[in-house]
Length: 167
Image 1 (cartoon, rainbow, N blue to C red):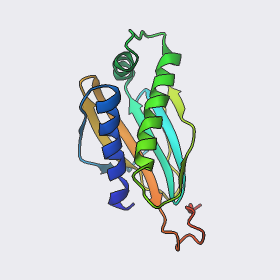
Image 2: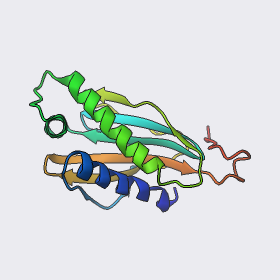
Image 3: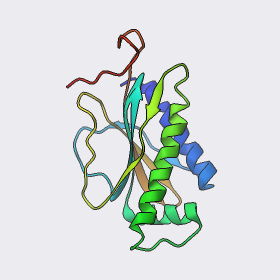
């Protein structure tokens, strides 16, 4: 994966947290996710298609998700509020994906609607042939991760400028 494909996500995570949560984010050193280790308890997922293809996963431990959603909504979020947590995490990953998408100028990029998984020990597998880069993150509400599996395809390499996945 081209390292420049990660930068838009770093910028977008910081912008989203600073703007929507009035909270800074520390982002650690990116690492290639070499195994299928479980994601955290709550994962928001969005796919990318077009000249940039792949996915982004925003994943939180449940307690961190509760705190972040409480800050985001301005309301207390309890253990039973999984629908509220799923909705808010879906909206956050949508903002992060949209912000990253805007940083691929001159490229045709579409994002999917978010999907959110709530539950312990789930895994999110990236597309075959894509490299998944894990961004360890932390904020006042706790630690979380952003997993980016993006393949950037030059317009002339894909024929019509569309991402081609290796099956």
